[in-house]
Length: 118
Image (cartoon, rainbow, N blue to C red; front, side, top):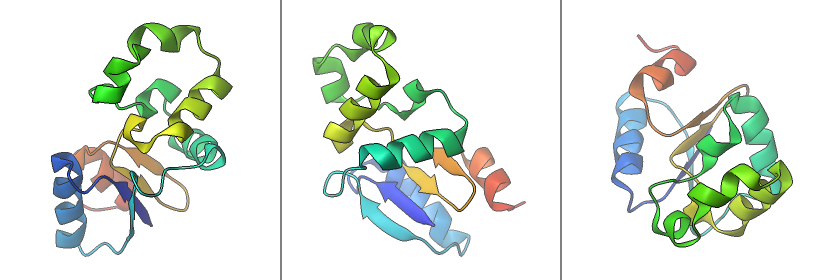
């Protein structure tokens, strides 16, 4: 599994501790240093089953500076993917990528269900 995170993010820190406490192995990837490519984002989006908007870090400074709340609804999917691929700080995190699932944001109940933990 790949754990995509921003080390300074408290939610990412919480998710990392949770993975470790549950004995789940993962490869850590810093989203700021290694931004997801457009192809990865497309694949993750399809695997996640989530609306593309859920991949945006709506509480981030860059999202707000760019006025994306008003712009996203009029953008095409390709434009949104391209924007997400341009800067890791626009992407919601953490993201956990497994063989057959992608989890965006840390919701313990969702993570437990996807990883088969009771």
